[in-house]
Length: 128
Image (tube, rainbow, N blue to C red; front, side, top):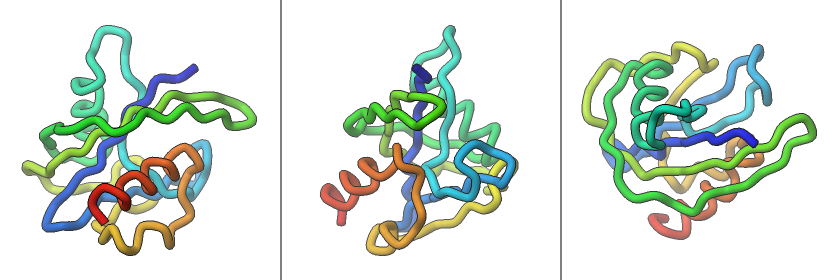
């Protein structure tokens, strides 16, 4: 079971979303950025590291949302989402096909990775 974090990064009332590249598992699906937690780090440390590695930005981490357990046909994960704020850095899609700032009202129009869908729904319920 993979332990994965994701960041719901707010800036100017928009949220950062990322489209997985063609070469990643779940190709071209949309997700909230994040990644695997290393054994020697907290979830928050891992999330800050992953966001810096993948997107070249610094974030502050706030409230944790409901964890999601999801089983794909070839792997399973526990996803730990956190509401975050953009601090600084020049946004760069280093691993994703694209990244973009999107309004909460438009989130459901995207083709999300299945594990991220409960996070999208919780976000809209909380902030939408």
